[in-house]
Image 1 (tube, rainbow, N blue to C red):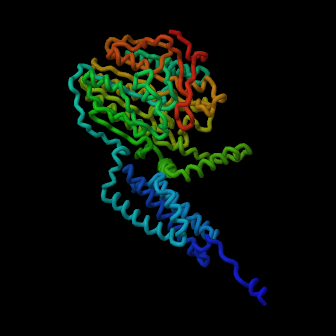
Image 2 (image 1 turned 90 degrees about the horizontal axis):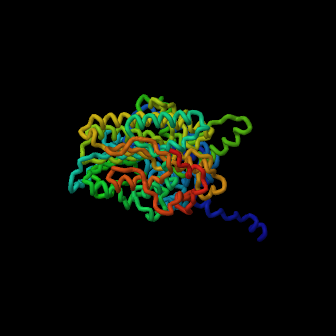
Image 3 (image 1 turned 90 degrees about the vertical axis):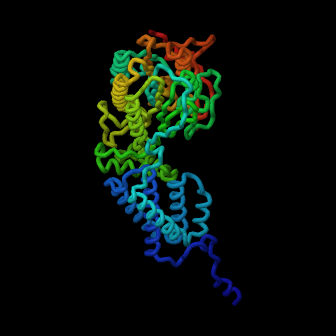
Length: 551
């Protein structure tokens, strides 16, 4: 009898079963799962739109909302199918998404633990919490108070800095992100020789001196630009710039200040130049910010970009989309032509924001006066390559990134179109300067931060032995041109690091540009790791491109 009673005694439930409701019906599981997903994603998306001041009532936004409802229905069906297991998993995943979409990585551990321990009530809590968010964000949009974050909207801020004396010249200093140097443009890529000759002809016609063999000493902006502006050969390399940086030792700005120039800066939120005391006006635009492009793109394209820029806020969503792209890569090998997402490069809005910054700079140069310096870092021709030769925006399906899954030649072809568009914008800027009060008294410096970086393998330490000399050239060979009273126009193909070129300009107060190479100087670059930390110095003395000194 005792044995029978022991056998009849129910087994204890697992601990995790105590924090869920085993009696929950499928209808209730579907309703709560779908509602929690819909309200969380809607509130988060509205917050995303209002941050950038994007019109909530636009057709593309409504299309994304329709997609949110479809995704929510799918989540509801999964929740109804998986039963009690979904009561634990779905709230945890939704909380992870909610935190990543709205707060980055902050509070993630606490949120996950709370959602797991309170699984019975987590979906209801999400509905209540984000219900309030939806109402608040809709009110913000309806009342017109969603002007966008200042950096997202590209607002200029007056810092109050004043120059102690006034210079009789003006300076326009333009960094064109990822503009390859002329000597590095590959001859064996279709349009390569043509693109080089077009650039050479354009800049010589406008009175520039081209230092066509210039190169960056680092692959990434966060390392190359501080070194270029620091001017000093012994400036220590800074570690840990994976998510942007601030230029802390800006000796180039020191020179501009000493010359009596008031500095206006146009920058992205990726690298901050505005902490220098000589900066009078600072305009910052978010590199990944949203821009309403109007009728330049179809509604479906704009909705696609909005959806994936929103998804890119979440590491969880990025990982899921990355796994999908990897699966497509292998599936295509067996003949099934599924589309790639590639959302990180081909839905990036950096070029849109770069072009908007460039237009702002052109407007500023129309009123340029002696005693003023405009320093602008614009994210073009940086990927994605979204403009044709005439600066018309391409369909989103035609956008390419530097690492898109097309051939190296096809990436360069798209890149050359965007370079040609950027050159048209440079011409607009030159015309604006020529019509300004500073006409004939302006030093114009145009250069890149590094090369095109259209490579087969990124030249980082983890790829040592895989990347080629051509990858080094594509990654590091950088554009440089200068026009100034007293500097003779011409074409110099010798190899110089950008840092020494700018140092020669600064030391001569823009009267000379050719560097005097230090005794014992040899060409070398820094090889970084995947986190962009400079790891090792690599001598270039045995590399053919770095040792060609043909005039």
